[in-house]
Length: 420
Ligand code: HAM
Image (cartoon, rainbow, N blue to C red):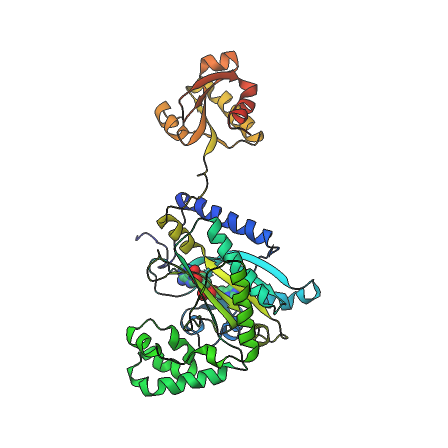
């Protein structure tokens, strides 16, 4: 029988890597907490309608990338391709408007998109996400952007570019869309097939096309900044001023439109110079009309999501530190059968004292036990002689230094040697 493998585009995150994820997640949690955000857990699947209406029917995500299925009662459900629409759904459903505003939330977890897998692009991937709901202040945009930058700073990431743009609002975007269509119309035949189909449905997405011909054509496209209404251009200026005040270096990219249709005003991305084609480590922006598009009242919001796989890839590439690789405090070694019971007692005594400890249950040879112990700070060696005298031979694995201590005092000695 053929061995079953994982589906294409998903990954197993093994212990060699999972500790790095834990480090990144820990730093993110600390920073988000420090910025006054609270954690929220949201469902992995939602009604398909939420994403169709929230993200937009004509986006690649909704048209081509969703994992949609019918449950046993015939409802159409979708594995979340992102978590912004879910956060807004939860805010409305849980009446978070009755809480002090704005509501500042963070979450982390897996997202699902049926994309062509490649380095840094998977069909199941993790996002670190923050959302601020209930404020239209440009200073909130600044806070969200600065939170992402603080995370990358704290993680030691460099060679990043922050690109920012305004995509306008329902008041000024239609005029820009028309100006763009007017500019592109004479070039329609030269555009790639997907851009030709975007022309009527979603022409702004053409600005984002990676095809060199489309790119060259859009080079001369009208500048979105020239079409912004007073409110949008005032908001953009205030966001830029705030970022300047904080010393955050950003570049305006007038072609940045983002792949999700809910954005209004601010859109931004953080690009890594060390990732190749899938270079966005972070994307976000403001979405003041998302709540209305899913049937709620007007609710301004702004947030970002950052792919943890891309963060870790960048950090590895740049030789960033992930903190200390987790190691056991102690590994208990029974030299022979006579010491096995005492070894087991010592193992659990150490664990009850809050030390991380392990031992071999298979009766493996000393050499194999010492190999396992090499991952620990200390080996606690017990043979017949030690058992008879109620002592433990304590070997510090890094230095090779060995000392003897009382069986009952082993936890305390290890703790003091570890400086805890
Ligand atoms: P997004 O740009 O679609 O935005 O995704 C955000 C980040 O998720 C990307 O910059 C990238 O780091 C990561 N990412 C996306 N797709 C993949 C993939 N297939 N494999 C690996 N990583 C991926 C959003 O999802 C919005 N919800 C962000 C947001 C929050 N906007 C406002 N609030």
